[in-house]
Image (cartoon, rainbow, N blue to C red):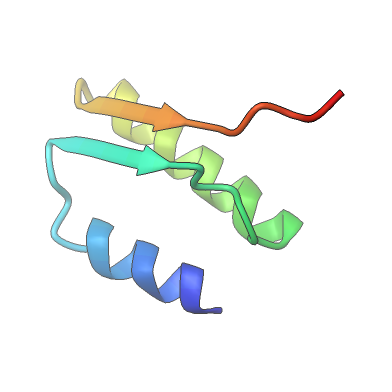
Length: 58
């Protein structure tokens, strides 16, 4: 829940550039899907997105 609140607070003003470090971490499947859709929409509107995810351990 805290992760969701932080994301909402950061993205609410609709900045032109998003810098997200492991944005899907600790999100439930529905929230992760919703965030992916927001990320796609952001890029389709010509805005910039930088995102990083952790490497999976082998």
